[in-house]
Image (cartoon, rainbow, N blue to C red; front, side, top):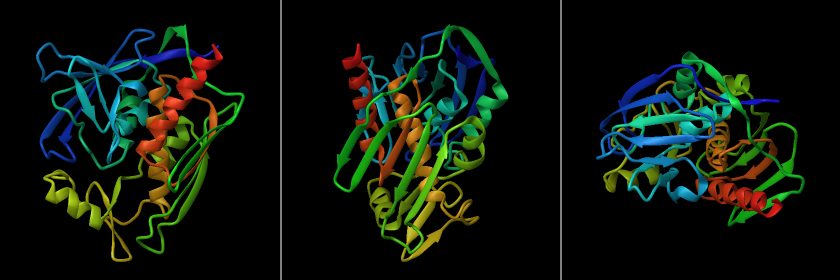
Length: 281
């Protein structure tokens, strides 16, 4: 029987937030069994908490935002959640002195590295897995997502953005700690230039740069050091799915097939997965 895990020791990172451009200090701490992943806003009176859980999602524009009645809210949880999910960490506290975590290099890689260096501590409660014996389906506009029964966590994904000849991409893999670290973790966030211009006009993306993002513009893919993989865009989308689907509060064991996924449909699917689980009880 697989058991729940937390991290062995604390781990910390500081850096610039993507949208506000302010410096953020983030610290991961071990948590008891059955805690889940809980964010703490140490900059707010009483350090209120919000659990990373699909019913707590309040916004999915550009990123996944969670909030609690305590008034605590956290923006862009998906990269941290992906790292925890892939590493098999069920329980942890994440303390932040602002609402948005450091963007780092625009990927989940630095967070996975933090967890790996902190170490994994097995706990005294059985791990909980989300599974299904029937297909589930979500469709929203051009986006389709199907969940099929599987003994492992696998994602197959197709994306197409119409910005360059290179942005129609497909990738499929089983999500394991080793595969995540090598194949998904390093993949950076990206944005179409026309959307970036809107973000800047709205006073956002103040911490964005070609060091932590890939830009699609006028038929070209632009970044300081080129693409890390020929299909880095679809790999990043898969990484986002690993994070968003961990909002079920359980490690996922299913095969997810997605066409043009985004945070909105990822969270919609996570909520459907929870509803299916409730109906089975």
